[in-house]
Structures are given as structure tokens and as C-alpha cells.
Amino acid sequence: MKTKAIFYHAGCPVCVDAEQGLANSLDKEKYDLEVVHLGEDKGRVSEAEASGVKSVPALVIGESAFHINFGASISDLG
Image (tube, rainbow, N blue to C red; front, top):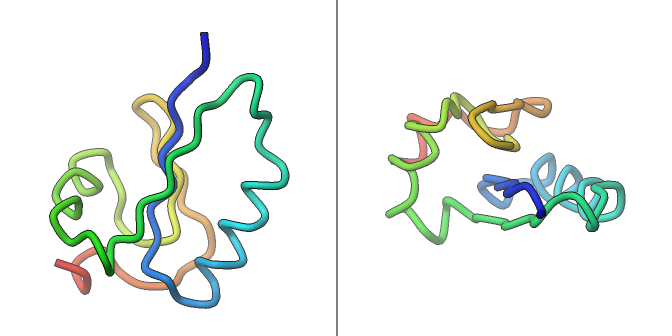
């Protein structure tokens, strides 16, 4: 069974680079990756916050949020 992974981003260059890196390196046999562009899907900002996302780009696996570099604060996207 695959583990759900959600990558939240806002479309900035830092986010796009991180998305490409994840898409190429995340083990597709172990993880089911969903990419969420919070700039286009603002309705999911509260979901990201509830998952522990403080800034984007961020990857949420299970109940853990991993922040990758710094593109934008989650509060700037709401």
C-alpha cells in the first residue's frame, strides 16, 4: 500500500524547482504524490495549515510536514 504524500506550493520558482526535484526522486512505488498549487486552489489553504504547513513549498507525508526552502508564508496565500 502506498503512503499519501501531498506537495503544497504557490507556483514561485523555488516551488517549481522543488516540485521537479520531488517528482524525479520520490519513490513512486512507495508514495502516491498529489501536487496542490495553493495560488490556484485557495480552498485548500486551511487543509495545508491543519497539516502543519507554515510556508511553501512543503511536503506532507502522513502527519508530518516537511518545509523545503522558503517560497512564501502560508498566511500570504489565504
